[in-house]
Length: 496
Image 1 (cartoon, rainbow, N blue to C red):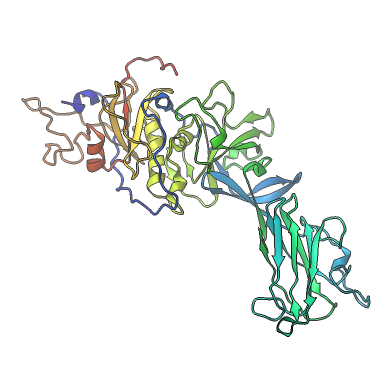
Image 2 (image 1 turned 120 degrees about the horizontal axis):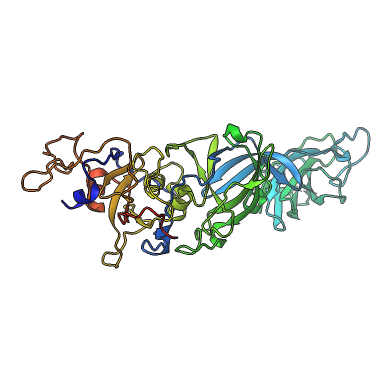
């Protein structure tokens, strides 16, 4: 009976949900690459029962606050590839004498202390050289008009010439060349520590007509926000969708590139791509002690774990939903983080969810043995499995045959759960959902209600969806990912 004899007895109830539509390839901007993952090595021990790895499932993009230069400020979060980014609005802070009218004071030039206005604000990389240029010759296409002056100040505060916060200034230069009688101002300066600069501008002589539209090389000008990423997000406070944590303080206390995080499982690095940041997050309830959002990670001796950001959110049934208002933090040992770490990074699809996003989702079903497709795991933490996929190219390649492993093909998976099954991972963990029809044999011992047979005696809805290998699962049931496992019988959890 092949897979049938391994699958079930006539008394076992098991839910096998119908396969989803075939995965469309999508147009992924980043290139797919095979994960350096030993499916029959250490990492085969990392499947588990948790989805999020934390009781707080989702967070709002807005409201959020960041801690910038020791001041808490509002920000809008977003997930960019494998990291969080915060868009912090810029604002002019305070005033100065140079922003007041000159009235009858006979002042002129870039060094004066009246008659200027705020032209805008820009951002740059600290300690790099920035050039703010307003064109070539006054009146030429794309250049200034009149005789303007420019002054650049550090941060968001306007400044006085050669005083605190002053970075540089320039004024239009009169030239004897009739083809370019007036050269537009250009200021070169070193980007301040804050990465923000404010530009003041005005006419050389107060009251004269002028215009200037400066452009920055080595920075961006004008802008209305500064984007914070990486360790700049330390101190960021999040708001959870959970009403139970509405009054809790949820704060990022550390951040690190995942390429710098070693793990005891193959391939030894959390994510070597360099495009993923991990965050340590602490939760302080309105009353009670501060705790880590992620309690236990890849290395259980550490006592806390990193979290990886994911677009959208997963509900209690394990279903993934797109969202423009919220995102997910997946903690180890939750399978959201594990499937990402195994190489199924949803952002590899590019701007729109596609094949890799679906593979990540299907992986979360597979890793938890979510046979009913409702978020209920039918496995035990630490149970070895060998995952792989049918993406082009493969993110995880199929395990080599004849490698000495006693694992056998278990199932083909899609986003709804198993599309077809060869055996269950734990014989004592039965899925009490929809009853799977037991195999019916004829007098010769042949199964006559196998779904693979279009002429089976039970029809499409009462047959047994059985598959013996990945090729069959992909071709007949449109499975996305696959796995090998043992058909475990012992009741005690396996040793990690």
